[in-house]
Length: 338
Image (cartoon, rainbow, N blue to C red):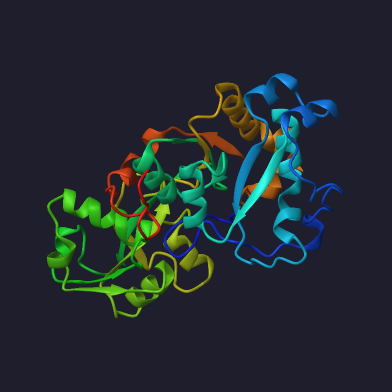
């Protein structure tokens, strides 16, 4: 589903939004008809016979948390993009719904779907698990950034200047599996020779980065993990500090950053590597021009105020890939034999 502003409880996250009714469009009359095979699709003249030889239909995986979805809201919201993608590829595009991101990740890895939007962590673990997926593009934030960074945040009047200064301090951390709130920072700390379990006096799980920042403001915590823009060392552009200021939860300049991680790409659009090269080329080209060529389709999938999509390669996810081993899923549970 679309994102807004790239914020969530662990940095930029996938999450559902509430949209006005005009964002939704009617579904085609034959929406519930059986998926066409290559011969049926080529006969009706809507599709490209040569492309159908490469792929009879594209299975586009999505997450729908409201399993009932009686009004087909998620499907109606995505219909402009589904139809636009179908025209661009020249093959039928069918939505395949899953209840959560973990199920969608597994579906992409196992080949149940061909294409999906994953979180950055879900992609990194999928790539580590099988090497059978590849990213095409990431949505840009309103300022044009394709990535963000985890950050350690302290009160501006404190004496803390470095991670080493925080020896014995109380640190706010995210939930288990949180990308910017725990997984990536802890891995990076250990790379620097700093064990989080012994460096800090207490690790306190907080209810998201804003909750951690509020506790730093009130002196309950000495520092907290949050996130910031890719090129914004002060945190005033976007991220935890910027949101605290925007919500008037603190005076500007009350918090500052003493450590930032390597860049973490925004949530990527991902395909199975086994797809034909021409299919992948058309998918990527469609994403990169969608904001200009088909604004309604772009608005159906892009973050609000996003200027567009940017290409991305698997190497951009290396900081996250390194944090995973092959025994556990990125989103919890055993991945099985792949």
